[in-house]
Length: 261
Image (cartoon, rainbow, N blue to C red; front, side, top):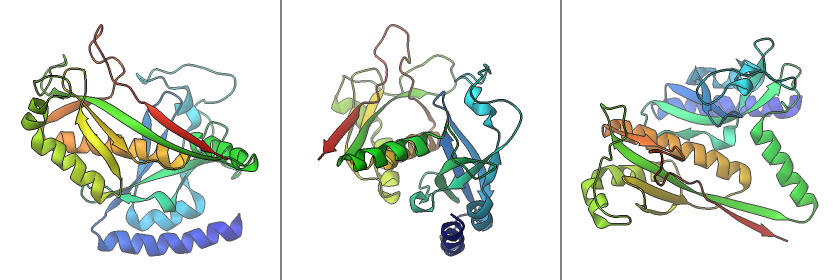
């Protein structure tokens, strides 16, 4: 581990210099916890080598947070005491097209003793990939990401476009918005299969290319963050909620799974 970590620090120094030449000032360190919330810390880009060497501190308490930031209890994990270390995955760092001056990196969470943290979803997924490989299986995944585009300035959801499901009218009304999402994803090296209006009011869907399960999950987080950033630039509010308006069709998150022997 020490030899591998030292090699990564050297890479991180080179990567930090490259990011600085690209105008990046800060790096978002990102993970998704048990409630499905994308929790983050950020560091100046010059601190990337240090973060790669010793990690960045983060409390384990967030694994007992609910989606509304209320806190529950568990005898298995979480609590205000102790600390975890966030280690950026240098292979997955992306310059954020929708947030100038920022790059994004998913992280692995490890204990203070440099052991894998039991609730680190990326570590769990990677372990499952390894077990599948031991059984002679290769796994590929891809996500369809749905969201509803609403107007700002109101607590209620008001669609930011009109028109029928899969209808051209929605794309006409939000043409620049949809184009900028495609442009941003292309700059982030996310291969998009298709983007189109969906069934619910103001709803769109983007389907991205397949990857191994860890990379596919990372990409799902990145795509959502990019959609949020582009939405902010266009003055609209995206919702990925399963039920945006109670009693009506909400957003799905379909997974395409392919297993090869």
